[in-house]
Length: 390
Image (cartoon, rainbow, N blue to C red; front, side, top):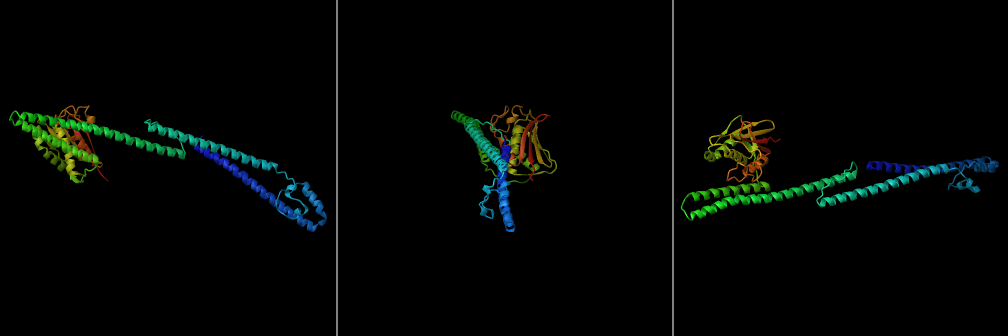
């Protein structure tokens, strides 16, 4: 039985009880009024016709006119009360009593059922909560209506939220452990190289080992800066000073900062200028993100090739594309390219796997998204979209 049906039955029972009590009260009132009127009539008749007094009283008693009453008057002077006169009131009292009894029984049954149903719901809810405390996240029995179902829904939402928070904390803990493992691995390579170089320096005067140490120290410095940046991003302490920034100028400055690397790889960067386009972003950190994407394209391009940058704007967002003329991304690497410390199949030996994840974090902090894919014409492409703010 639904809660709505129980409310209807309880309302019907209350209606029957109220009607029965009201009818009985009206009956008593009517009897008293009839007795009062008859008493006044008889008193007046006796004053006008004293000779018919005895006949009048005999007729009244024979016709069962009077009923029980506490009023005093003319008839009472002769010793008559309503209880002395037998009125036929059985049918009315039986009807009123039947209605009262039916309403009382119906109300009691519905109340007992409702109370039992509530206890059953509470017991079921308690059992489900106990199961969830032991890791069994079973779905609650679905209620269709009623205040209890609202309470159940709120409890379920709270439990689900706590479960998601717990799962998120567990994942974060596991990721932290993985990150520590990756950091240890990243630090192990340059430290080992420096150690070997120092051993070689003890037996030879070759300057190439000095250069090797410098290179590994630079790698450690870069890794340290990247890890500190990731820590600031995770802690929410990286402050972006956003301003109106010209996209072409931003891309050109990023390309200029990679001139030395461009000469090293033999890969040039071409920024194709179109109409003037502005974005609202932090110029320094956005340039850092763009440089990481450009660097990735340069590392995976063939010597003598180019890395291209284009941009365009519509009503919703500004799009920046950075692509190369290389072999493209391995298909199995694409879903994981922006994961921290991920090193793809064709990654450079000294790659830390942090650059792309940093670029993604910075772009997303500025209401943007970035994705990687292989162009149909060949080559890898990074697509950045910075959405307009209202």
